[in-house]
Image (cartoon, rainbow, N blue to C red; front, side):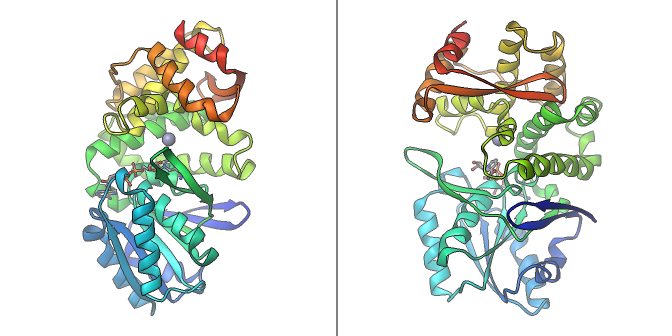
Length: 352
Ligand SMILES: NC(=O)c1ccc[n+]([C@@H]2O[C@H](COP(=O)([O-])OP(=O)(O)OC[C@H]3O[C@@H](n4cnc5c(N)ncnc54)[C@H](O)[C@@H]3O)[C@@H](O)[C@H]2O)c1
Ligand SMILES: [Zn+2]
């Protein structure tokens, strides 16, 4: 078993191995006094994995109740959250009980926010089941739900007591979502790790599965380092947003349903690297290297809108955050920084 320790406002361990679900009862007992667990899972992960988790909790002498919601981003809203609160109340959960998120990023974000807010805070355990949740959303303590005005607008920082990454569950993850997670993994290589990037370049979407545990560990370590330096997102944590400004504009253009997050980020990384290359901010061959890496994971994406059209979406999106924008630029593989510029200059750059 690999253990990655996080030292944030609360310290916790991220455990990475196979067979962790079967042993989760014993593992979580080490970090929480809770004897009653609310297992929150979606309509795909509950039938696959809730029984294993419940059985393990029972074996460890704990009690539990399972809450299931319809899978998908469209459930990450105030209605489902209200149903989770009602479920916690009706099942008599107290502040010394705990919430377990058993699912992808949607489950983790929403269950995490429920745990942050119900009774002003309960213990929280993350059991991420999608690749994206394993390498990104389950680590770092950001939780949120969407409101009609925008994604992730209501949320809280809530560090988990433990993160259990059981790599066996990737066997049932649909290929579409595996590739989506690979988009974020390429991002980690680009911003921080030449060796990870080289590893990705020398594999493809099939062969990478043979070494996925090592790849997950490397990504989680990078996220851990960044989050430890900047837990509350005032500086370095912004590097994790490489490719995300234009990626978000692409997702928005397609109403958050046409192009998935990891694919939008892949396209966003390419577009911003092309622009940065024209500005002389990065190594000449970088765009080609990135494209070669993305191609190995089916992450070369065609989109309808021009960059100029995306500029308008970006402008609308960023209006509420003021007149300057921080753009993450990768200068060479593994070497990145945030370049702050006036919003108008950025839009002018996009419009070329
Ligand atoms: N908190 C953060 O720091 C952070 C970071 C990145 C993304 N996010 C959020 O994460 C969400 C996206 O996460 P996601 O891509 O995991 O979405 P998701 O939770 O919807 O999972 C994707 C799909 O895979 C299914 N699934 C998950 N694991 C499975 C498994 N092992 N077997 C079979 N099916 C499985 C789910 O049911 C769902 O249909 C977004 O809401 C995003 O805002 C949060
Ligand atoms: Zn992302």
